[in-house]
Image (cartoon, rainbow, N blue to C red; front, top):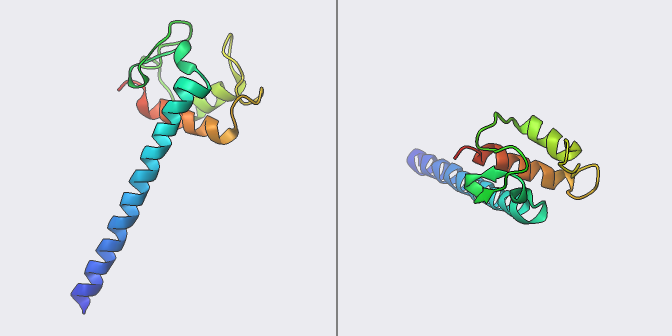
Length: 108
């Protein structure tokens, strides 16, 4: 009985980890979609992982990024970059998703 219980616990954690991995992959795909389509970040920024080669904004593969700095920049804009949050172009959730995508994809 102890072995069966142990195996069931292992199976439970395995299933949970697979679900989290699938959710993370879906979130990254949504971030790519927002980057390339909804917000059209690729029109201005270079980022190899997104297939983006814009030359208006910074090359995201070469700058030091944190989730907080990207969320702030996307929300409030800077220079010619629109304030996607303040202008209602993206929702708070979309900003968090695309920011997570950028931070985890830049330089790769």
